[in-house]
Image 1 (cartoon, rainbow, N blue to C red):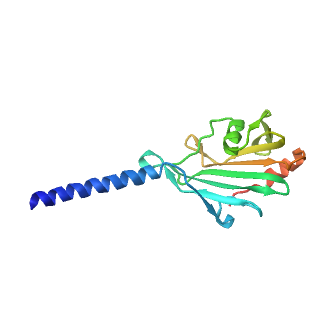
Image 2: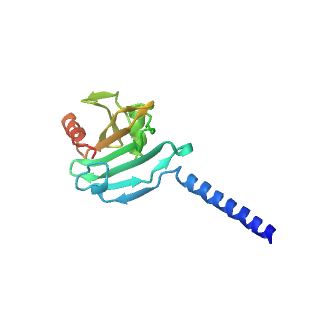
Image 3: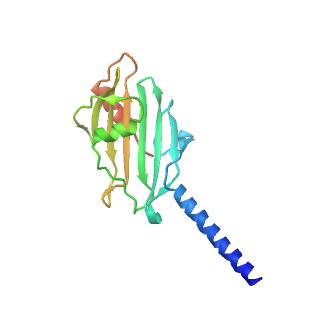
Length: 181
């Protein structure tokens, strides 16, 4: 009887350990879900679809991160906004890639190419590029410095509607409009 109780205890402990390992592994990848834009960290405007991820932790569960997105077609063109943020004071988001690499990674769809040199607009780094026939521009803004990175990184992309150009003034107005809550 004692052996059976001991074996049951060992199996229970192993099962609990397995559940903890699976739960921890599940926290290591981002899973997107649609949300009401009023709940988004991004101050999105009408016509955009908002999403967020689960909180993902690093080894040892010290770093905790979440991503937010808003995208859609508007009268100004295609818009994609993105925020990646640390969820505690130990978490920092690195900004090691170039602005062009960040914008290309953030864009994710289409085939962006013909990237310009980086230019500054107020407090952001920006690049222009093309996605086939569509002229586009993207930017990256960083939050406060934190432990080798930043507390958040915000990015935005605007592509002109078919057959239209994208002016510097339009892109500047777009950048000025993108805010966090």
